[in-house]
Image 1: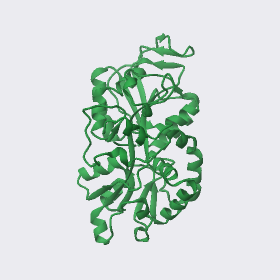
Image 2: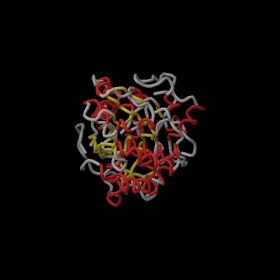
Image 3: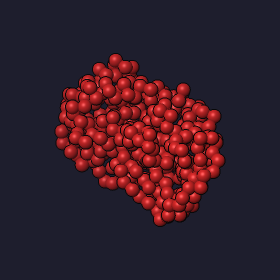
Amino acid sequence: MKKSLGSAVALLTVALMLGACGGKAVGTDGAKTSAAPAASANADVTVDTKSKDLTVYTALEDDQIKTYLTTFKAKYPDVKVNIVRDSTGIVTAKLLAEKDNTQADVVWGLAATSLLVLDQNSMLEPYAPKGVERILSDFKDKNAVTHWVGIDAWETAFIVNKVEMEKRKLAIPQSYEDLVKPEYKGLITMPNPSSSGTGFLTVSGLVQLKGNDAAWDYMNKLHNNIAMYVHSGSKPAKLAGTGEYPIGISFGYRGIQEKKAGSPVEVVFPKEGSGWDVEANALMKKKVVKQVAKDFLDWAITDDVMKEYNKNYAILAVKTDSAKIPDGYSVDPVKQLIKNDLNDAAKKRDSVLAEWDKRFNAKSEPK
């Protein structure tokens, strides 16, 4: 993205609609059949129009996937959908490891910064899903035929257990700067950016917000207060919900779900602004591409599933007059987002993760 999402969305008065980032298999009944090659836009690729077996890699939340797939299964009841789900960093690493023997047919709801890395490795097959013209320009690849298409954005939030803070007579932190106060020492968990998309967008966001040197100086101070780095963007919110560690650096959707489930938490969006990323979809490059993979990507940006995304996400990739702001978000969540260049974040991803690991990985939980 050449422009920041915040400014572009504000100019376009984007519809306000938010969310984010373990492998498991979920399926619908259907039989795999032999390939029937057909012509493709890429002369080196054939299209299998017969197969009804689809493998989808995703970092979407477990409790979102089943609901989202309802309308796809209704439209394509004979397609067996094999979902492989894990946190963003693990899915990204798995895809890169499988580069020469790609197992996934499509990627659904993975961070755009990860898809940009895959694209830099020539792993994505250009495909423009039906209806792609509805997707706002900063939520999709800029090539003539798109390499990836976004569906929503998710952002950094603090999930804070109010009961535990009251016991300690501590104020609820409202900013990044609050988090480095000495009274919060040992009370904070945060996702490891190498394994979690939420962790990476938070670290990358700090670099873009503060500048490189100031960001690393800040993270050195924050590290003093961190009890543990975990391998999931959701886990800090869950730990805050139980009170085991009362402050979790997580993402808005998971905090709001914890609150809805009865946990005594407050969801705080930092005063300085939140780091963010786009959840996006792509067709994986293979010698034989399945038609059902293209059908899936067409479906993944339809109005039906966008309505389901709307139940969780504050910022969607389409402009619509029917959008609703989910409970727990501010009136204008777009204003919460920092200026963020996703292309630059993707290019610097390896160096940022290497530096973070060198400095802070000793406090990470075992994998």
